[in-house]
Length: 272
Image 1: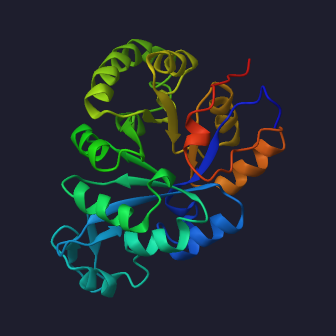
Image 2 (image 1 turned 90 degrees about the horizontal axis):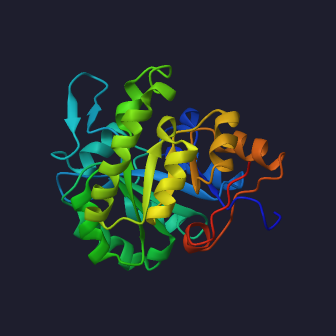
């Protein structure tokens, strides 16, 4: 990569392949084998205090009924989902092979998460994201060497793209100032935005205020190219291998690094 090229990385969303199962061993292994630099997974706490990799709060049962994750034991959940991974299992197998983005799907288990990461021993390889400012603020104290990003823009996932376009500029402007207040409260270094929210103006404005931008969930190579060119630091995708091939074909290569520092602390570069 030449000196003027943007510094960014790619993150495999829940392992990056729904065909192999979200947050699954097979999915994560496939992403790492393909050379994807970072892995994202969802983290929830079970009723018996285990941290597991699950996106949804409820697990349907084959014979009818359901398990509410925050009330169920990890044993009961594994009967329903034999491939279920705990956070400790995930870090032990993949934490040395790729950078890690832990997306917290809830709050109140920050101390437990910090203990697991500290036992594992490499918090500098962790990027924590959450919609909850209070959670990130606690984690700033418990895991000060892990990066923290406020996840924002979920409303845009339910808005038609034509509405989320240029006509939404006043909404984006208001959101920028609300974000600034919440980011300070959260003690976050980054903001993880839905890709529809991200514009050159917003990315530049946030960077001038001291916050880098990562984005989710990007599956269109043209959209990924747009985001990388305006200075987004990490692109999270369900199809990271496809984006990897598309971007490298344009001489835009994601950073492969031992810590997030090499991605997030480099001078930002946007292409015309």
